[in-house]
Length: 410
Ligand SMILES: NC(=O)c1ccc[n+]([C@@H]2O[C@H](COP(=O)([O-])OP(=O)(O)OC[C@H]3O[C@@H](n4cnc5c(N)ncnc54)[C@H](OP(=O)(O)O)[C@@H]3O)[C@@H](O)[C@H]2O)c1
Image (cartoon, helix red, strand yellow):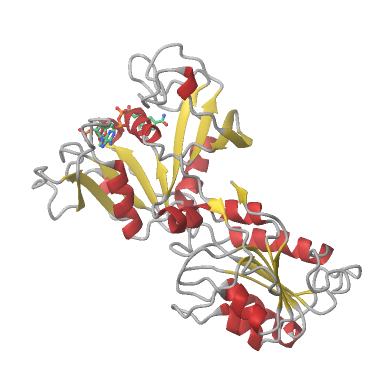
């Protein structure tokens, strides 16, 4: 294949065994991170992974990303593109190469077989069934370096890492509100607070999520559809409604059409006879009386979704359900669409979250701000009590595997 991204400065002499990654490797990792992001929304329950193969001279000769679960891993795509040019070269990959045979063979073996001399990866694989690739590579004499751009790579794989480390999906709470935090006017009218650009962006968020979730209040008020529209090639998420008494979602509800799968979560003792045959039901225990009394047990919900290989959940409201998630410290990320509109009265965007004094306030970190037409999208994280840690990952002290940066919180 034709050579790309030629960089005469970058060679292995810049990055000998055990040294910090050189310029070409850093550029290749940036490219691998972009490639990995192309898989967002379509690789679940697998991680997103990108890989770039550099030849001996540090030139890019192969690229690949994991495109869908069950399909070839990023390294396999990149090796196929590189062909014989991979021999003696470097594989730059956003996740430690796997060491197990699942639906595809171990990438560590494929890299060794292709004659790769050096592997630079970003994040160590914490999955107990797949880990050990770096060790296998090092044992075969490959020079291995871990931890390059570990923070960025972990952020890109946050949903998968959260599910591997905490056995629950990564939860993003999304809301749309006026600048003064109202979701509707005092008379209940709420249509089009945010612009078309902001509403289109929500469909991108849905497309990246494995499941979209609302409470029975929203189901009752809006009869929401919750499927993705206008995102070419999107994998439709599972649409989930929390309807404790099986009284809000009726036969014929838009969420029950065939645009995407749907799941109605109801209490173990709810009479759901009206929905039987029309919707898949998930029976859940009620929230523990000692906690927030209303509704269903959110931990049980997330455990059930995790068991169905849901790695990311987009919580779309409403205020009461979002408050309950925040109270349980189950929100990992917040995406707020703020319209430059003032109402002064009307329902607030977040319901009771069990916070009664300023000392208990949840303080988040803004990760991104973006103008969308007249509106502003603010993304903040740090809300969950148990944010995943990015394993940058050394195999063992004194081995041929080194780490470029220390493990960091994200
Ligand atoms: N601006 C926005 O971004 C946005 C987004 C969504 C909705 N909305 C608006 O918000 C309004 C609805 O909000 P809402 O607060 O009334 O309803 P909601 O949050 O959608 O639903 C709340 C209901 O969910 C059920 N639920 C089940 N398990 C729960 C749990 N563990 N914790 C809390 N609730 C649980 C409860 O009813 P049962 O136990 O009886 O099932 C509860 O009353 C609508 O007007 C909608 O248009 C705005």
